[in-house]
Length: 168
Image 1 (cartoon, rainbow, N blue to C red):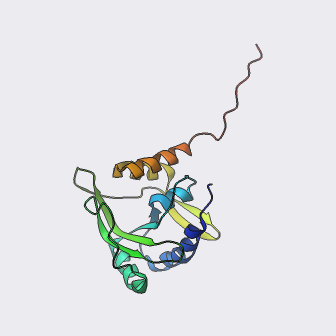
Image 2 (image 1 turned 45 degrees about the horizontal axis):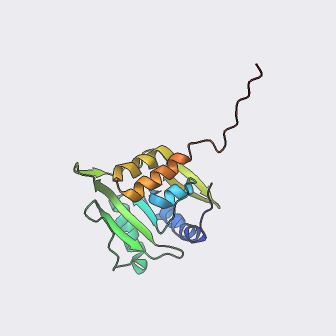
Image 3 (image 1 turned 90 degrees about the vertical axis):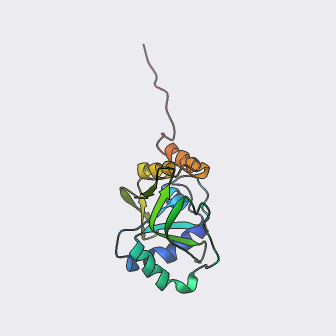
């Protein structure tokens, strides 16, 4: 696994236990943080959390004092959700309740598919599986998402290939 940056670890150490306690429905990390937890060599600037709309409302209430009211996400016309960005130690945590995206074919729900749990110093962090993350990134169609999908695809390749020697 690639090294987990300290800022990401600090944010996860504080946010993940609260997500387990306060989310009534399944949730997971998506985006660069999820890719990094599976071992992809990608930069991480924030933690994206995919939750239900109801859980997004609960988190918005519980974390009201952490909310960044001035932040507006890029690509706002391409994505929609019950969105809020919160200040956490290390890096921001962005909550997306009921995330949908429009890649030119109408609004589609972003579904994580099969989840896996990544263990991180006693934390159980749900993320989409490798193939599901690649699917999600490719569906977004942005350059930065294609780069992340490529980084995840590289994890499928063997670390080293030994030559096969024939003695004929």
